[in-house]
Image (tube, rainbow, N blue to C red; front, side, top):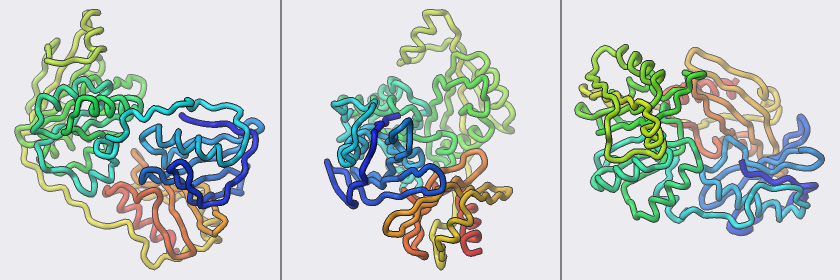
Length: 393
């Protein structure tokens, strides 16, 4: 992760803008060794730089809950803020010359989960690829089928940046990328609109099977989002994963499943080519959608109406947890800015996939999530209501 170590630092007078980055406020946590959050805005991306005491100096790095997907944004903000502090740099892993990796294309290609939950693209037939890695298969499919829209989902940030670069070089216009957990993403896809789902060579996670993409819940959501003639295609070199996946598919009540072995496809990854040279077996499971599913429906909002939250109340709830059978809220550390604005770090949502974000409190009655409200899911909507109860209490 990008970081800079300083001997000392001076807090510049905020707000200030430098090198295109707006540094709007700084928040201090006084309850342990003091650490700070610097609120940043760069290319319409809001995030925090985290400053914490470290080895006789201070460490500047990303705050994970708000970290921007593209490393360049964070690297640029860190370097710029370090210069503003006038501190001496002890060490840094940020290169002197930053690579933008064709980030002029970023705004049009790399999307946030909020883009999909608020305005899911429905203009073209849809294909989803989970864990696109180097992007060879995703890029090939998109070039071959310009009439379709491809959504590529990946959690490995360097892979995302490299594929953004390739999309720009090749001039491809029908790919959108997302840095997100594919298992959760499927819950927000409208019903019956997807033609194909590709899950090629997922990480086997033999020691942590709970992290596998293929699961009963993922298959259920895939059936819902697929067109009745659509397909889910799993491809793996792991015999353990194949056996596990086949057993999981067979647990469903009504599915059309085809199993294939060592099937050649038009495009393969460099890893697949290596495995074939090693004479490893490649397994495929193809699932047909079959059914017409009911529309996806969610109701509710993330507003804070008629809520008053004093500094004393913030201090009282910090460190406490609310649990229900639907999920939880954990109130973590809190921060205060010189102007009185407060930031309260939260973990909330379902037990399996909680979100980490902040509650920004201006005065006592102006509350909002930062950098954005939680994902529009049933678990988050329920836990937001529990949060309102706790704050009103």
